[in-house]
Length: 122
Image 1 (cartoon, helix red, strand yellow):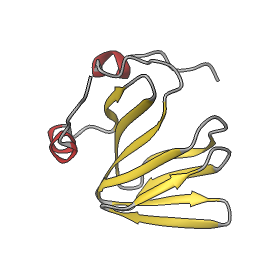
Image 2: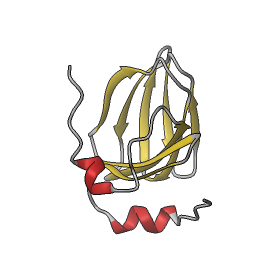
Image 3: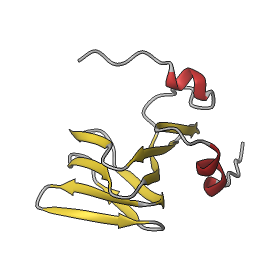
Image 4: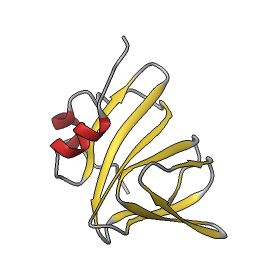
């Protein structure tokens, strides 16, 4: 099935934070994420897959080994697997789309189920 999504509209419809929306295919996973200023994703390393981060709204600081990268609306960053990163919203609101190879089906079409999923064991 082919999907057409107006991502700017989707971002404007939900003023929440964290994962706002997602869709999966057999091969790809797309997740729309939002954070208020100063919030974001803690430092972590993804050893499994490359990730494309596309900023839809606002500005982000992405801390990478050896070089921090600031991203603005409309900019894309390819983050290779094995790269540690931390993401912080520099603007009042940061909204970005993550796109990567699908790991396993998570049922992101149902946002309520996605938000209510159990947290992974630490």
